[in-house]
Image (cartoon, rainbow, N blue to C red; front, side):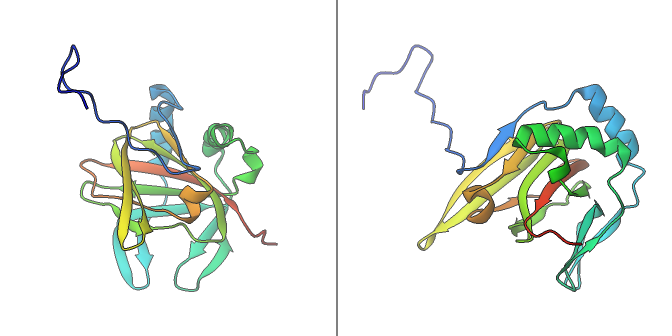
Amino acid sequence: MSDQFTLFGAEPEPAPALPEGFRYRADVITADDERTLLAHVETLPFREFEFHGYVGKRRTVSFGWRYDFAARTLDRADDIPAFLLSLRDVAARFADLSPDALQQVLVTEYDAGAGIGWHRDKAVFGDVVGISLLAPCRFRLRRQVGDAWERVSLVAEPRSAYLLRGASRTEWEHSIPAVDARRYSITFRNLRERRP
């Protein structure tokens, strides 16, 4: 390696490689679209997130299908509201899917200090498309390689989208550390198993 510096200082560190199947895109919707969505989202009937007796700091509401963590079942939920259908179209285009393929929507409210620990989405779901609203968050990914963890993270900005598919969906876990300000996530999923 050369001891010389470039014209503007040291060579920058290369950006970490994102996992296979992971995609991220900023500004998939406009600020006006975000404001319109937020006006509807803030009126949704959120409930505290419960996981095997633990109550999380975040609040959620599901449409289309809802995963019951206590019963470990996928149950029908209220239909996807009309105000989310155009956003589902955006998510579907981003993921190269038909909008009708995205049958489940999870809307999550993270107040300041709330996050979500390391996890993989349940196996009944296929692709995962998330759209961030209102505030940025750090989106972390990790997978175990031998006795160590390979880790990658990025900032998911408001109005951005991410896709978990392939190895990023099945081999990697993801998490969001505590956020600094209220943030909403609208997550669209397709189903691996069709339910009647």
